[in-house]
Length: 229
Image (cartoon, rainbow, N blue to C red; front, side, top):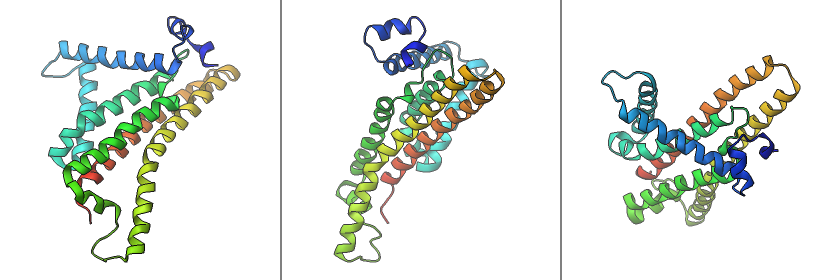
């Protein structure tokens, strides 16, 4: 179904055996890179046009990360979190254009986005706390829980952390796939009034899902960096 909606030259790339989600992932990356180059070449003290939009995104991202992790850690992790958020946002918006497909509506893409968050969380947690990082998985230490309870809490925490990349990827994939199917069906079956309303709703969903992914990634990283209680 997806191949029939593709426009030239994207259909040509798909005919060569490249999956649609890879093709549109390249397109999203190209859009981001081109926008960055345009803004870089036309920087002004008083932002206008695209620069103004990009600065709004940057300010939003820095406020999100610094409010959760403090200025030092927030600015360090800002490029990582912002890159994820901007890519997801652009990828989501591609699905709103007739003939194109959101790369985030494929589970392979969303898993590829969620796994770096998972590995970065534990890498920097171990780097920051060394062996003390294990305390994050043992529950509240002040109450001195019995060994069986501590083991139970440890197992629950392990399962919860393993579930994080699954929930991150499935949430984004499910919402984008549902939006893609709904818009496609309504464009075929209903007048333009309803599809326009659905497109407006799709825009809201695209923004919201990018924000949720950024927020959860920030909270996971912040939780790994803070001291265990």
